[in-house]
Amino acid sequence: MTSAVPIKNLAEWHSPETRSEVIHELIHGVDRYNPTNLPLMEEYLAAQVKEGHYDLLANLAILKLYQFNPQHSNPDVIINILLKSLAATVHGPDFNLCLGVLREPTAILHDIESDDESLVVVMPFLQDLHELSRTCQFRKFWSEFNDDSEAANIIRTRYIQQFASYLDSLRLIFSISCASCFSRISFVQLSRWLDLPSNKVGEWCSKIGWSLEGETAVIPKNGDNDVKAGVVRENVQLNQLTRLVAAAAA
Image (cartoon, rainbow, N blue to C red; front, side, top):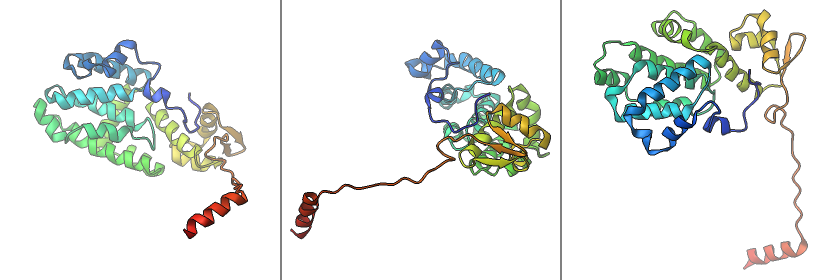
């Protein structure tokens, strides 16, 4: 599993290693807007879901094709894309970028003449989860996620089971967010933030590269959680100061 420290290099976000050359050409070429490529792109998304990969630009290309060809929209694909972006980052723009390409759920269902109201129920729920994640309200996030609401049940029973370690993906991005703010966190607090039993917290910390001191997780220094005060010294020569005073007096 990826080490839970803030990510500095966005190369993987832009061009993931799991993206094939064919998909790369579709995304960056004129064929990006060819609706006949939708089955291939949707198959690539299915592989992301099953194998745990993530390719935002490819998923945005699918949503863009739906925007231009609304009759081809697939609610299940849309929900899977939103779920992938939700579990990709806490503070990144991914979810909102996907949402910005979509129309209202009722309009999407009207275009494809579907009576399945799941999209209408689920999309607002995912927006609420994203806001809770973005504002680091992790305890409330898990409370909503594990609730018995219709939307939460649809997500858990119809979609999450298809994903490779989806809950761990959420825990990882929450851990990365914590790593940018803390150098030490108690197991009790992590248990609440990550929705993990207390006896599983130590195992999780070891998996993501954090060390343990008793009942406390110690997070590696990463440039965000070990801010040091800097001393700035100005070296101003007398002749420079003279010119400055003369210019001010002019």
